[in-house]
Amino acid sequence: MPKSKGRRRPSRTVTPPPAHKDTKVSPAWYVFLMFGLMAVGVVVIILNYIGAVPGGQQSRYLYSGLGAIGIGFMMTLNYH
Image (tube, rainbow, N blue to C red; front, side, top):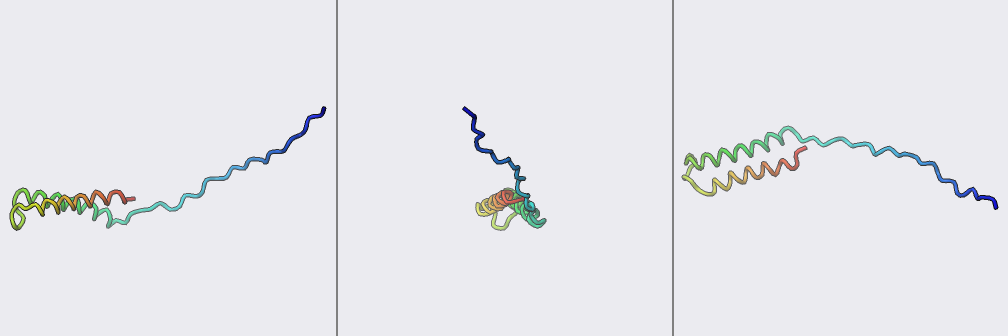
């Protein structure tokens, strides 16, 4: 009995990966704002502990300093 030739398989074509789009770059002001908020937060906390802020040692200065540092760190998540 003769063998059947079977179905011909199509030749495999290698498709190149899609071209990579332009990489995102953060503007220069973003970096300065990010580190500036962190620095201002540290300065406010230090000034609060040495009592150099108006009104004496108050927790609102401590929380605002921690908030500024936190916002600065949150900005690092979007930095490209």
